[in-house]
Amino acid sequence: MLTNIPQTLTDYTFIDLFSGIGGFHLALSSFGARCVFASEWDSYSAETYYQNFNLLPKGDITKINSEDIPKHSILCAGFPCQAFSVSGKQRGFEDTRGTLFFEIARIASYHKPEVLLLENVKNLISHNNGETMSTIHSVLTDLGYKVHYSVLNSSDYGLPQNRERVYIVAFNNEIDSQNFKFPEPIHRTISLNDVLEESPRNAKIVERNDIHIYKEVSTDVDMFGQKILYNRPIQIGIVNKGGQGERIYHPTGHTITLSAHGGGVGAKTGLYLINNSVRKLSPRECARVQGFPDSFQLHHLDSQSYKQFGNSVSVDVLQYIVMEIATVLHSQSLSKVTV
Ligand SMILES: C[S@@+](CC[C@H](N)C(=O)[O-])C[C@H]1O[C@@H](n2cnc3c(N)ncnc32)[C@H](O)[C@@H]1O
Image (cartoon, rainbow, N blue to C red; front, top):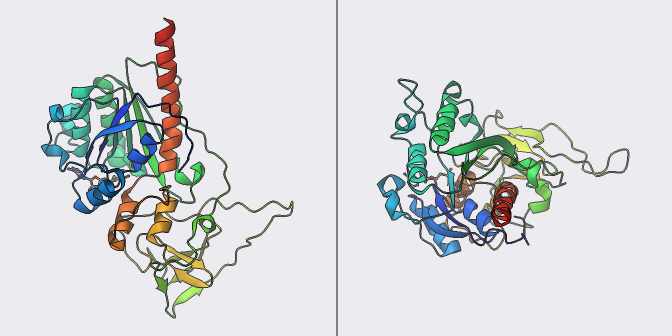
């Protein structure tokens, strides 16, 4: 997580829908914005959220009336991806009824916040032959928003995790957002090695006789004396047949995408060859590769922590996006003053 961020959003409020453990909360509040409402129906995630932000998320968003949600300037949501009923191909608001995106549209339609900041899996773009994304686009456009979206990889924004996600930023048409752009990749040299705990007590070590390491990785410098930069996962071996959760990676590279589901001996984190042992990541290491600071309190159940970080959003990526949003909002208020 980036620190010492200019407090450019102290006049702004936000709501955190599908809040999980609060990745959006960390990113927005680092700019001085204030959270006025959160919703998360998983009690374990809500516990972690409360522990860290002293705000208890309300439950099922489908049961919360829009008028019971406080007024806010920014609506944040990392919502689950679902198919819409595109029966008549109207691609309107009603086509999304019964989905969680409908809840976002319903709340945005009532409150008309200045900005919507949404995150989803990369597949959202190709989902249902592009129909899902195009419905989202047209619903938000009909609600009076200018929609921007892009797929960004956490590996390109200072975190050692290969995680591609689609980010949607929609500005209320009252805001001149034509200068908005998604952040360019930053070229920071970081590897899993940089965020490892010295001797984690809760990172499962795999001891079996079907571990096969087939590749060596040079961890030093290239022919020009530069430290070699591997900014993607480097697979060096397998356990068993090398299926999902059975691949072994080198800590000089990045981690695979943390996941809330998925099985295999390296379930949810992948396996890494660290100090001559093959092991999973610890919950704290998962927090770090998602950009959560060490001051972030983890859930006391490791199984919940793994799930929570697999589901959460990469904080640094959001911070770079929010920086660009803040630039647009700030130039807006300057032009208001000068008119
Ligand atoms: C992809 S995760 C978002 C994680 C979050 N961005 C973070 O940083 O931790 C989606 C979350 O939506 C929650 N959720 C799903 N349906 C919900 C509903 N109807 N009401 C409230 N929360 C819901 C899930 O429990 C899950 O934690």
